[in-house]
Length: 522
Image (cartoon, rainbow, N blue to C red):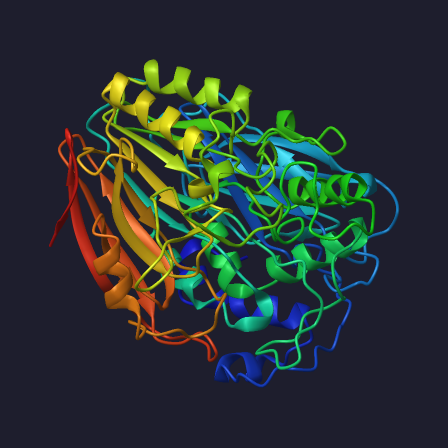
């Protein structure tokens, strides 16, 4: 049985490596040459680890998925085609001397033998430990926490967030570094997997080709979940997740795919089903065919509300070209008053949540750049029509709602594979417009490879976008601590991901104060 301390010491790594047929000595030596994966079916059904998520004051979601053979080509993890009883326990201590809740869930083959248990009646703002038992085996131990009671202002929120984990482009060391911080909550902002087929020169080989059906998406999720660094991060804290494009297909927009084959709504339904099966989401969030509602609010007492947004499922098609890319300042369609990146229902829902918030901080967890960004160096203007610059009216409606409700809004963003920080203006069309929010953009876990701290054109980009205050082009994550009086932010970077076990360093630190939506550099 692996406890939290053993996880953080790396004890989980050998078991997960063995699931992929990697010899323990090779895993310990952290060799980067594990190109040929040798699949070795084993009896342990908990090769994908454990996870928790969606904390509320009296409960949390506990997750696992049975898979003794994670790389089975059919995506079912080597499990028999029959239901399996899975027992779970929740305790106040990691040795399980004080079990406070326990129960039994049925892991069914039609849901890839995944388990989503929802224990209730828990103490608010409390730490718990959990484990599962099935087929005579006991899972690793996970740590989780419940949210503070409504109105609580004394309990800080220690939050980490990241995005974009491409298995083929590097090692998941950023997950280990996040786990070592032992946050209260981890927010993942999209691209948990990449649907692409095999790269010509991968850092690590993936199983299966391009994800086109349910078996393919299940297999890709299983290979990610079998990674020991990812298992550490899931086992140490509850997660709040939302997808971006690569969780389904590159650059999809609403009902419109980038490529027509296979039929997109069937492909999207398969991707949504696999996403639900592999994430610590509530049973109420099960997909209905090609629809799955992911936007919701996670409340942390009266200190913070985390509003997780979906900028993919309900957006209008890309302005001017119909495809994602950079468009010039003459692209009038991006300014059209009826364009939306959230959809009318989600926009109204978010405006209502901001109006009724009452928390010190309102965090908007979402996927793509919200700040205006001129990506063209020198003369001329070039805007990404995939981010909020392609949906200017939608951004203006949101910034108007933030201003009207006087919320301390902080936008948490992924997608662009680099660290950025800046200020969101009430209207970027008005040069004198004031800032109404701060945006913190996390880099990727691996996507884009090792990267650089600064690129040759970084200075030009920052000079031509003065509301942007910070950039770092390495991989990593962001950690933040939120209290009633301030939000402190550290951008954590890794010098390399093409080799495992890099150390993390702080590439930038800022403080944000309530009532002043500006970045104060530390």
